[in-house]
Length: 329
Image 1 (cartoon, rainbow, N blue to C red):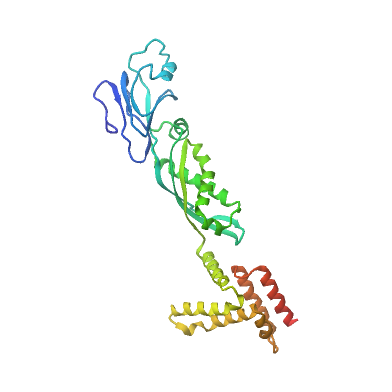
Image 2: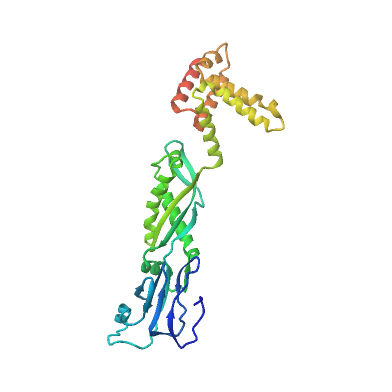
């Protein structure tokens, strides 16, 4: 029987439903007619059918073909006081539920999540991924989400599920127990941890969270750029070589500009100056011969910029700053 069609008979004697994509629950269109005693109920694989009367969930049926009488409707019989072999037509709401897995559902953070990171301090993180779910407890699902609706779809519940995911994600990541770089390096472990954090909220709605995957973790572009540059500097292994890195970086940038290589002078010179400040040799020669005090303070400012970008540690900054101040003391 196609959805929405009605039988020409006075009584309903056959009840079945063919799944529709995205439909989780549907109230069978009996309208004001009555169900024939001894009628046939067909429940297909991946479905459940439930009889309800006056707001009470009565008898539940799994896959198979069922004859509707007092022996197969014991709860409904008790609710209606059919204690003497009831055989007349009766009224009842019949709901079908799709128990199939709803796969390839997308989730994501509408706003970045602010967290305190062990390595970088305060960060704003975005995350995206996919999940799958199925109806786990029909009665809980009906009471919390479906109610008196004639049909209930994945699209109806998905905004609430995405909010559940976002809340659990913010709570878990906000604890700051795992550094961002560690999370990004092991997304499977993060996916498993977040699934455990999200699953109870799904269960409360009568749903089972069958899979949960984190596909992407990202930072704001400017923060990611600073981390990338800091990583490049640290990869040199010797902070005295920063000048060479800065010069090479400036040449690459200048090649893409209309001014060409002629535009690299100031940037390369700044890199050389900082490289001198970071090296012992630079400390010995850069401040001799009556170098102006302002040069030392300018270099300290540049060093602080490296510290902020994560290119040097606090200890390295303090040591170089002390050495510079000692030269002008």
